[in-house]
Image (cartoon, rainbow, N blue to C red):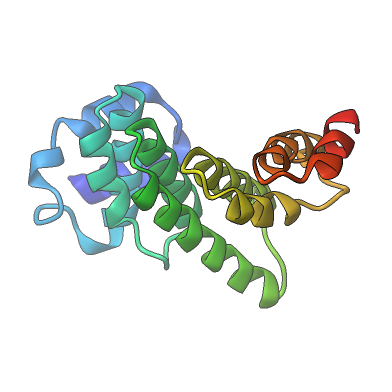
Amino acid sequence: MYSRLTGTLAEVVPAEPSLRKYLAKYADLFPQQVPEKSRDRYAYLVGRHFYNQTANKKAIEMFKYVSQRSPLYPKARYILAITHVANYDAKPAAEAFKELLRYLLDRKSEGGLEGDQQKLLELARMGLGRVFYSTGSYETSLKYYDAIERNSHRWPQALFESGWAHFQVDQYNEALGNLHS
């Protein structure tokens, strides 16, 4: 039953909240009662349901099940990271962002990123910049902000946010330059 549900309905209506809600009813049976080939998709869909319901602990548990072999892994890892941010857990948030970053940089070096992967790469860098800024690791946050490419539409935001990090480390000229830009 689970295989049929997660293998067909989830592909036809992947963002349908009522489907995710229905699948979440069976979360207590996961992973034992869910066929192995459907576990990644099931964990992602149910994790999204719990995330949308702000049941962060359950969402984290589900997103951790999504394996690297799944095409849903990058999205699951990103939502896992922002769920940790929502819980004010900087260390696990940074680890999840770093795992995503390593995964995406490996894919990029192997021949390029597909679909939303470039967007997730930039979002992971922005997320790391924000997490490290929030913990007072301003130099480290600058490293991640500086990794946003100039031709990215996120570059102005990274420039603005890094301006504040430059200010915190007494690099006033860089801070002022970034804020004026």
